[in-house]
Length: 162
Image (tube, rainbow, N blue to C red; front, side, top):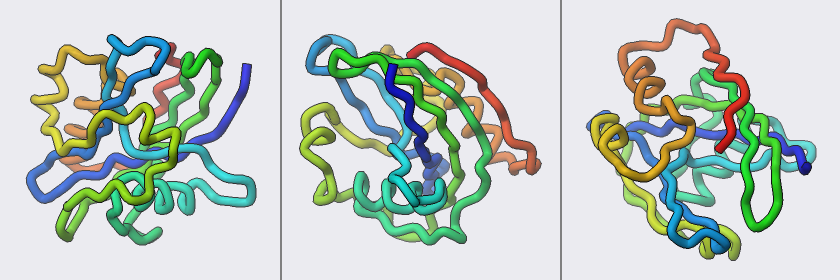
């Protein structure tokens, strides 16, 4: 099983909506899920640097490293994608967007273009109401807690099977 480290970002706009991505696996075209912006940490790159890079690549939005709060959550996940199992160790950062949240797809890789269906700003109520899977599973609760104010404690989710 392949192992990788990833930085993920809980990016919230001025209407308390979180930016999420809806994707699918070509091998399971009927299964869709929502997840946060983020991705693998490149060799020699810090989690903070990866978070900033991934936000820009996936959304076209610019955030500065000093805008990142946290990590606020850690999680490990085992998932199958493109006929491969992967163990991913994730650090989540929180960012309150203070500028226009217009999304751009220009930075998407060929892989992202192939599995990302859409990106959307959703409220936690909308995330709870979706019939699609949401990862991490308690994402709406995590975002609600952060909107109320982060207490400085890193929330460790542990291992989830996606």
